[in-house]
Length: 102
Image (cartoon, rainbow, N blue to C red; front, side, top):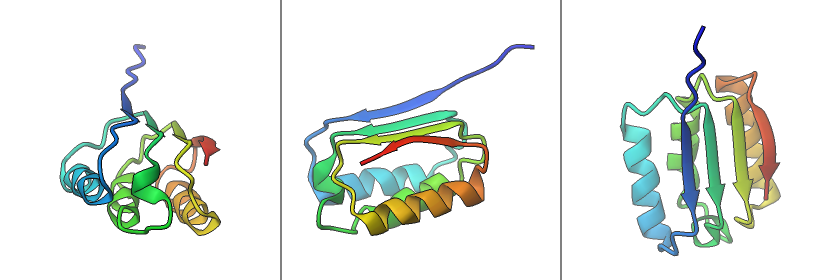
């Protein structure tokens, strides 16, 4: 048996919240449902004091039924955002390990 792992890694793009929302919406609208690991690192502009990126992110995460690990590092997520992400991932990929949400 061959294990196929694919990773989506988004790191410190420095892009605006509107660009982040457009990018996440493009992912949500795509057929990209294969990543087993997703890391979003240092995208504070997308999440701190705004919810604009949350809808597209949650839509994208809801499609990731094979997701095994999720890490969201240094994004300054609010407690409400963390709860939304945990709930979405537990519904769509119950075996996913959420390694970090911050």
